[in-house]
Length: 440
Image (tube, rainbow, N blue to C red):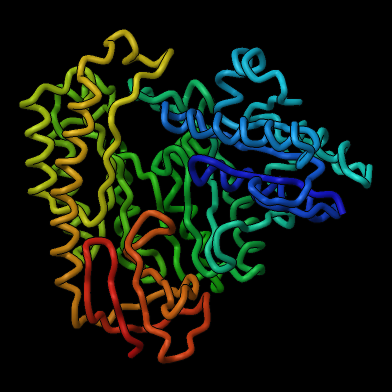
């Protein structure tokens, strides 16, 4: 059996791409193993992220690790794909000539062709790209067997000044509803119970295909798949937020009461410079509407500190906004200068030390908020999806917690639970980012 060492970096969209490649190879007698495995592989593949500087640095470190393994005989050829390869291919080819092939985001068919030529079996498994991207049966789920991502579109039509994604992945290209329902049915047949719907801009789904925002219609179609018990939405852009989506979420118990809405900032001058097409008033109105229609909603957001025109006053307004809104989940990025983006000419006016201090201050505030919210749950009964057993505890999540980024509910092993099943548990204790519970 031929072996591929694979690592997938960056976002959940990359995860889906890697799962499709791995699944197709598995059907053709390949074994997929981690990049850090001591076993020898025929090929190593690094699916990279190129979003911000830290992500690029991480990707390069893994590429160099694969190259070292090649030099020491622990792997054959090394191939690199994904956002970093798409954006910096020419420079990287010169800097790391030991890599045997660089492939952009629209070249997964070429990646497959190159990999299969290095295997013991030279069977023809190349697939036309359009067919390959929509293949259902070849998806190898790399998360938990009961939880999977569904990527509903590629690319983004937004022009946020700080973001390089449109430069890398191009304009939005939505996948038709019928194709997505077919893929979701295939995932349900594999045992998936939680479907996490992702895209660069979920709220814009369908604009390119149907001439309107069709995320609500897509959800209605997906809800016909009875085996899937939780539908979760991630990356809901605030501008153009479809209000009918909130109505559907309010009426359907299988849609998690979870809004992942990257607001980035609250100061109107900063938002305008960021080209976010929204203002402070727009943001406050939207959040009020979300909470009015979904009173039990958990709101997750991400913010950027240290943007070039973020004054001390603008930062203080952002901090006050966090304190006022009491978000359930929150992450902070420090501004990263990106070549070719509209914000690039603005320079990098806030020092790295000041950026880090601002990020730490907001995260310290959020830790207090999170602890208070979690403490208020003590004594309550919540439904939990069990992800795994870890030592003497089971680890699970509520509908308010997404995969890999949010709270964990720890349940003692006094009672035997089945991973991948739902249970009602009573919260007995809380920390800032963890809950402890017992089976009801």
